[in-house]
Amino acid sequence: DTAVSQTPKYLVTQMGNDKSIKCEQNLGHDTMYWYKQDSKKFLKIMFSYNNKELIINETVPNRFSPKSPDKAHLNLHINSLELGDSAVYFCASRPPGGNTIYFGEGSWLTVV
Amino acid sequence: LAKTTQPISMDSYEGQEVNITCSHNNIATNDYITWYQQFPSQGPRFIIQGYKTKVTNEVASLFIPADRKSSTLSLPRVSLSDTAVYYCLVGDPRNTGFQKLVFGTGTRLLVSP
Image (cartoon, rainbow over all chains, first blue to last red; front, side, top):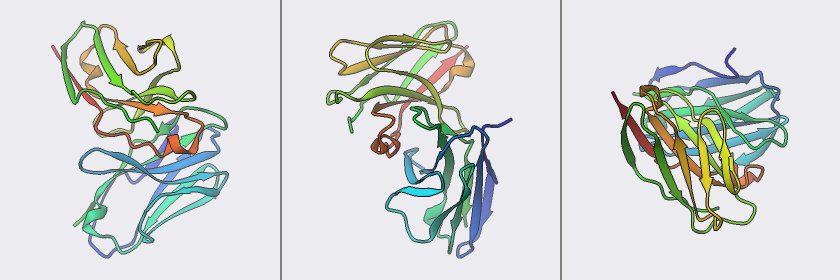
């Protein structure tokens, strides 16, 4: 019944690997996001998609590539992982014309 | 986007009322004030949103003075489960810029028995 679900919740991987985090929302929202929360607990937006179209692309390394197969899914693929990529990644969504952002429970990525 | 200032941390006891104030001196005409709550190991959760005066829901109340340069989140009779980080955001939630807002460090509320 989780509205915004992301997998995996925890991921430990070695430098240089490629990994993906999946996100799905069953709320019927048309806008989805990826946020990154760093060690200082600042939560910053990375990407936003509206109806499968990229509308926000913040200053994020090219190693990060979002993919939205449909408006209920927004996956995040990360190539050549670096130590500095260790963080919590949150998926979120917003209803059409809505003013509330709904967050998933986060994916804890640790790069060793 | 309006910059916000809120206390780093607050302590309280069960059953007390907690008021967390957020300053936002350069709030714009179209900006709303939104509060989120984040528990450890979870994503932020929307609590309440308002534009002016007072807004109340089943979780909290939000008091906004006439000049809108500050706002106060009021949590009635807190319990241990209210221990969390509370974020104040100011902006037009329908504006792309709002979605880019950095949540910042928020206010860490610790409720003790």
